[in-house]
Length: 252
Image (cartoon, rainbow, N blue to C red; front, side, top):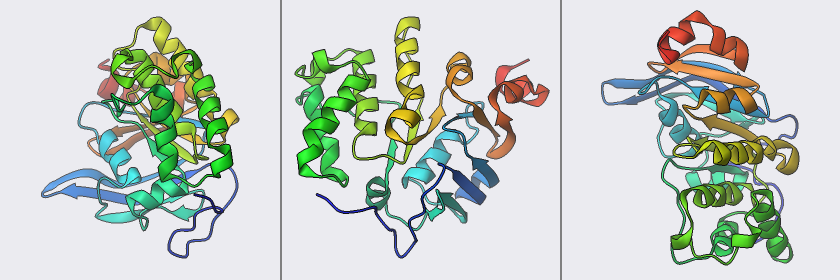
């Protein structure tokens, strides 16, 4: 599969600094409003998305990735309208995401799990092997390349998810609690791998995680949701020190 940059339904391809623009976004499930007229501009290489349980974080990621529909509003990624694209079109455009439960095929090796991702995204056949090698090298899994998914421990499964996200020229990667269940050493290695993505692969990262240390370490900008509304947005340290955020999210 080859070709140039994907263009969604006549939307012009726009190059420049990675940026997510959310404009008056509302998402409702019946009578429940999960996202309520959200406005935000996320322009840092790695952005955090935090908030108490039920705040709308996963709903927002589902809308961005095409698994939930917006009632109204717009989302632009690098100036390109996202909500007009199908889920498959968003993948070809360069959107990637992980899930809270790893999507690792048990009877495929770590290498083949990553290579299978390339079946769904534009790439040159001649560069497939190099892309998979580079992705596994990025997450330090070359020595586990031949290990079947069923034999990978939780940490290596999470790192396979990171490797899958960086092949095929990603533009925006959404990570949903990638650090859950990892110990301190594993969290540090995951942090390093995610923090290096913008420079190494040119993609912007949006990270949901309850680990405040992880958010603080690698996210220069953070959006806080509460009951589907924007509670705070700005430099991560300033956001986490905001009294309203500490009351809603940190319980202080």
